[in-house]
Image 1 (cartoon, rainbow, N blue to C red):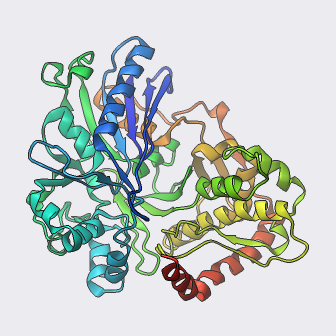
Image 2 (image 1 turned 90 degrees about the horizontal axis):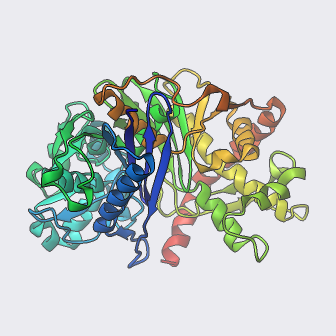
Image 3 (image 1 turned 45 degrees about the vertical axis):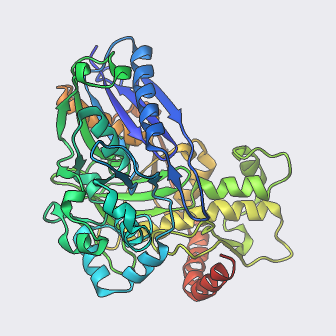
Length: 496
């Protein structure tokens, strides 16, 4: 039986799925790794540890299936940055998307006309997550590293170099750097000038279907079990999550809720908006994935469980929350939570914002606060959904994937707050599945939608009465941040 592997190189783990036409999700393998925070707001990782995890996951997958794959497709997290020498060796730890050291750079750039021009050219929001802002920070604070580096690459480029000894970057990962012109499909000169580099310091951009055949005799000894098979360079995890969850047609929407979250619309064109800065990233030669990420998805719930809920509650014991809120009405009796506990990306793009409970009264108990936390995360998702929906027809249905899909109570809340019908996608990992789909085409395996058994799909319809209650609360939610923005910034700077 022919099968392919889709490997997703994430922030916390490498995860791979085996997929064939007969059995679309045969096996799943995963290998976790850690990150370091040497200073407040800094998030770094060891790229060699991630490369080792990648090799282990591929080996375990082949061991589990009992036969080698017909091809491997790659997905990876966005916005990582590694300075390497001519041999591809790291000169410093990898800076991840979550790193906030370049927040001041992003804020200054966002307020400038040049920043606006670059946003429209590159499709990348002006935020500390972007490699453009990271490189400007390095130019200003670590010019020695800027001069020593042969290339600045992402984690997928690092792994691709280890496989094929060439510096290549797919158009999808390039399109989320802030350095790549998404309309001309080449590095943007004005962005390079701001970063203080030339295009020689970056990898060669290639389409997302770019393929190389792996040669075991010239490769890593730990991958010697692989035959000569094609590797497809693939795209970013966010872009691949859309086809991987079934949102492959123009105008279809996917929501992913894990530690963070994102709303992504499949579009045949970029969808820029200066005020709210939705991203426009490349999936393939004809398709953009547009939308916005939020920082505080399951992370906000974990924070609540760990720090506020009764002592002895496990960090991931979500059932405690859902039992608490069973008898609390929609809207938490007027209690509203702004979930910006780690700052926020879309649609406010403010690293100095903070979390907030608003409307607390004597009638509110712990269960009200628990429900408000869940509702606040859903409000944040709706906020992004409304932003990217300005220039699109109404979204219905919305495909939802990620770890939180297992909670039907939370998904019902999301349907009620957005007012949209939801399709809960039963895939182990939508991004890895999307990468596998690309590899299937190269391996000559027909890809048929959906990627999962329709009988396994759960549909959730919004409750109109609850949607009306939430609409009122959401209007207040939307009004709070603009009024409190300056106060949030003062508080942040007083305590940093």
